[in-house]
Image (cartoon, rainbow, N blue to C red; front, top):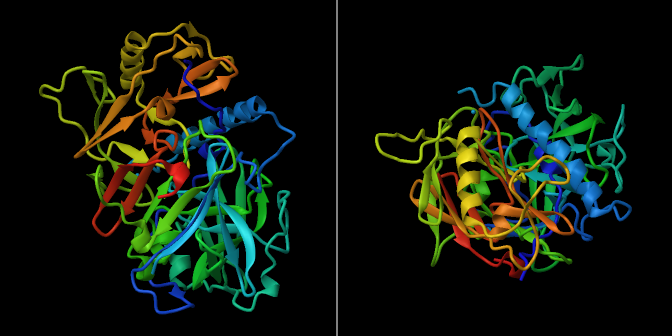
Length: 455
């Protein structure tokens, strides 16, 4: 039987902000006195028919090609900046989309639904706002702050404004706070830093949970390769302006998600959980420490090695087959929900490809896009083994669906690539795991799960 893997997009590799901050006590729940409780909502994969970003006019191979190009932009931005030089129960649904996941969040009073790309590699929450100096086309109505009774532009002396990096925040002639974010492919978003009420819809029913005075970017000038199916970005990073940090009084700085694998087709959503709903426990859970490094936006883990069968490769930029007399650097890889592929140092990647090439039974072919290595004809002779990622204290088994993707009707390729100066554990590798972030305890947990059935 052939290995069945679906194609997907890599657009998510583009959108990762440069903020390095962490907000506390800017929000308060408006429904009731929530204290370290939780909620769950849907995550929607970008290319899913359920996604507001779904474009039926594009075939899956065209979309894949576009995503591969965007993936290069994201990794190049990380390498070319100084980011890595020193780097109550609420439930909501998340929908998959072209390698990215979007989440519905309503802004304002009365609430207006918007769809933001979920990204653990950035902090700032932003959405397009009227009036537009220049805005990209958006399928749903752009948020109009003049129609919200809870909208408030923040002064330059506010905490949120001070959390912005000097290169990203400024003071307007009116004494209000402005932000400016630029991305690696020349895309940018500029606007006002404001506070607003955010409302989340429950995954199980139509109940909602609202939080007031959440700081966000109200973007009046947004240009570049943003997709019209999304309104902006929901930053889940470790910095002060992220959604997780701002809601921390109510959710205890805990969240988790369960991403459906890209081999899964149909109208199925992933889930993201906050607060007590975001706790990961039970049989099969393994946990690894979060390593504190700069910038605090990113979630750094320590990858000690990867095994192919009994062949264990020690993780190193210089690569080593043996662990004898070799000390692994702490915090050597970033876990990122907004990156589809996994990026590894070139020497280590080459050793891993060689080990997989010796273990896989199948007919090697070339990637039709000329981008990915280690590709095979997808037929009954193909046999892809499981591999194991060895994080400190946590061995995470990666099934074929976590490591190979279908790039054409009859070709599958290894979903990891080489990159110097940065290592990222992407969302393909995280599929069918309940991945939990406990920022109070300083750990990330993995629990095997069938994410198509919820968590």
